[in-house]
Length: 353
Image (tube, rainbow, N blue to C red; front, side, top):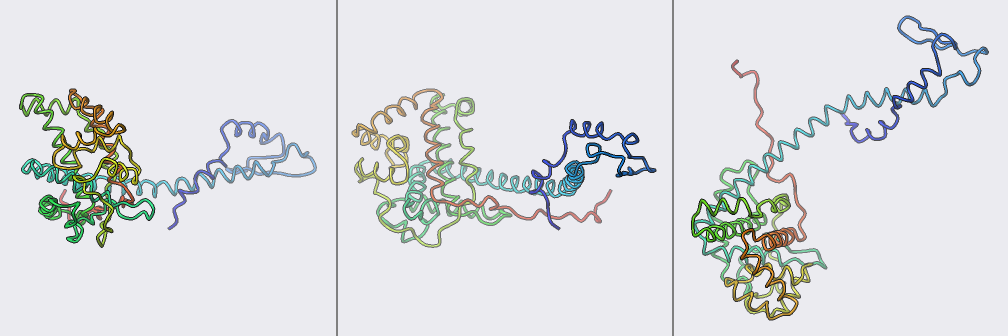
C-alpha cells in the first residue's frame, strides 16, 4: 500500500479557505439561480435562463473536488504517519537505553582504573586524527584496534587502554539486543566517560574531597548538558583495515608547529589545540608549558588555565566538549538506526485478563 504523506503539502493548498467557501455559497443560492435540493443531493440546472456570472466556474468545481480528495488522502495517510512516529520513538528509546548502559559500564571501568584515563584520551584522539580531508578517509573509525596500527610509534603505551576497552566491550555486548557496539563508538564514548570522570574528580577536589558535595557541585555548575550533540553521533562504522601510516604525530616529540599543522589539517586551530592539552600526553602541565611557548597558542592556554580555577569552569569545559564532538565525527557517516531491533511481539491470545 502506498503512503500519500509526501503529497499532503500540495493537496492542502487545494482546500478552499473558510472565507472562500462562504463567498461561493452566497454567490450560488440554491433555488434562486437554477439549483434545487433533490432529496439529499444538489441538482444543478444549466440552461439559457442562467447567465455566465451565475454558473459554477470550473475553478470552483475543481477546488471542491480537490478539497474532498485532499481530506480523504489526509485521513488515509494519517494512520501511516502515526505508525512511522511510533516506530521512530521505539528506535530512539532502544538507542537511548543501550547508550545509557554503555556509559554506566565505561564509568565503572574509569572509576576502577583512573590512572589509565590519559591513555584513553590519547587513544580516542589518535583514532580520530587519522582523518585525511583530501581523500575523506580515516577518522574515528576504530582502525586503531588493529595490531599493526596500535603498535606504531605514535600509539606507544596505548595498548593497555585498548585492552581495558576490549574487556568493557565484552560486558556491553553480552546483553545487547541490537548487536555489538562498534569499536569506533566504544573508543569515542570511552573518551567522553574519561572526561566526565576528570570533571567530577575536579569538583570533588574543590570540595575538599567530599564526594557528595563534589557531585552536587558538578551537577549544579558542570557542563553535562553540553554533550547533547556528541550523544547524537552514535552509529559509527568500523574500518576493515588499518588507516595509512604517517597521519598522526608523536605528540610527546612533536614541535608546537607540527601539532598546529596537524590540527589545521582536520579543520581546527590554536584554540582547539590548547583545549585538548590533556589528550596530548600523560603530563598535561608539561604539554601546556610547551604550547605556551607559541604566541598563537599562549592566550588560549592561559584562558583555560584560568577557567579551570573557577567554580563552573565553563569556558574550558564547553570548548573541550565542542572540540571532542567535532573530532569524534570527522569523516563519519552515522547510522541512526544502529543498535535498534524489532520489538518483541505480544501474543494477545495468551493474555490472562
